[in-house]
Image (cartoon, rainbow, N blue to C red; front, side, top):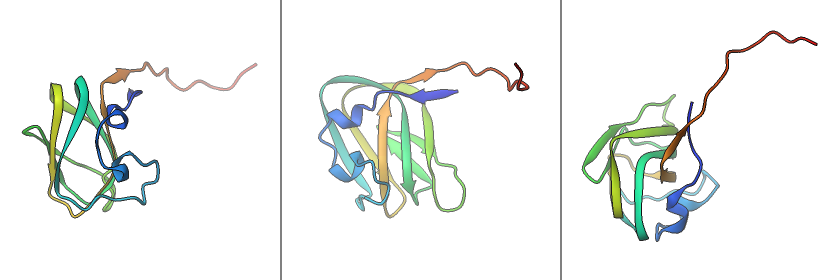
Length: 116
């Protein structure tokens, strides 16, 4: 299982609606730029609540999948991005929570029967 532990967006100049824990907060801009104080390496991003089907981060196009109109989840970039600026655009009308950083691979053991 891949998981994002430290969201670099929290330490950026991103709009507050993208940093908010509430998925009800939405950014209606279809393109925006996020700047970090120092160089960051990003190899994945997390989306919470968008109607977009594609998002572009620094010229890498990612197709979003999800159930119904909600495209939530962790998406891996094909090539890691290192730098101080993320240029983001999407083909939807809004985007809720956005997270970005480096994923960590966690091992998952198979389910076991309960026992004493």
